Image (tube, rainbow, N blue to C red):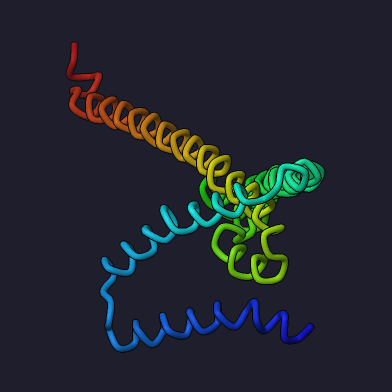
Length: 182
C-alpha cells in the first residue's frame, strides 16, 4: 500500500521540487513559466485524457454512468451550496463568493488527477478524470465568465449612476442662490 501511494505521489513531489529549484536559480522567467503552464494545460492534459478515454472499452464507459452522475451532483451541488453561503452568510462580493465556491467544490482533478489516479487505477481512471475535468473547466468557466460579465455590467451602471449624480451636483452648485435669481 505504501509503495503504491509513494509511486503515485513521488513524481508530483519531485516535479514541484524541481520547479522550486528552477525558480530559485532563475532558470525560467515569468513569461516562460506562463507559456509552459499554458502548453501543458491546453495540449498535454487534454490529449492525455482523450487518449485514456478513447482507449477505454465501451462496456467500461457504460458502467461509469452512475459515477458520472455522482461526480456531476457532487461538484455542481457543492458549488450551488457554497456560492450562496459565501455571498449571503459571509457577505462577500460576487467574485470572492464565486472563487470560494470554486475552491471548495471543484477539486484539482485536471491537474493532479492524471498523475495520482492514473498511477493508482490505470486506464480505469481516465473516464472520471475526463468527466470531472470537462465539468470543472467548461461548466465553471462558463458560469464564472457570466458572473464576471454581470459584475462588470453592475460596475458600469454604478459608474454611470455616480457620474449622473456628480453632474447633477455640479449643476446645482453652479446655479446662483435662490435669492439672487429673481
